Length: 180
Image (cartoon, rainbow, N blue to C red; front, side, top):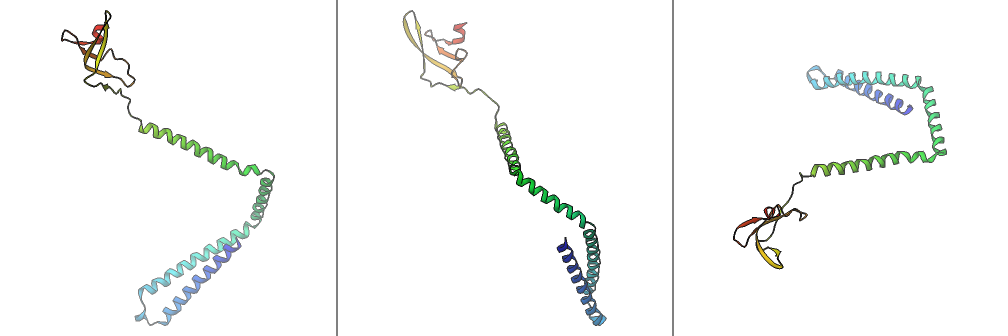
């Protein structure tokens, strides 16, 4: 607080000195050689000096008034330092909280990204090659029937609904029709 007050007094003194220098320079110049900007600078430095003076006075009054309270704050810091020396694990607790919250945020971000990039689930059908055959065993004899259209689910299940082949009578038969 003392350093702030000293700095404030020094800057206020510098502003008043600059104002006095500008004023004396303008007072010694003839009126026809004075620039409008120089007169504006003089007025600006007068305004800055007045505000700096008011700020410095308020700062000094607050410092003098709160001198006793500053002593209480110093004593409070000493007590907290001795408490931290007696319980050093108190220093670790904010780090645990930080890492827990960071981990939770990372998990939350991962879930949000998974949900954001998820697509609507659809069944993908695979079509077998055109030279595929269906082997049917009837009365002890095995017959290979060429498939016209056969589509498999991803897991290869539910074929009976989608299996079409050429019957030996040259008619198209759906396996679902045979099983029902």
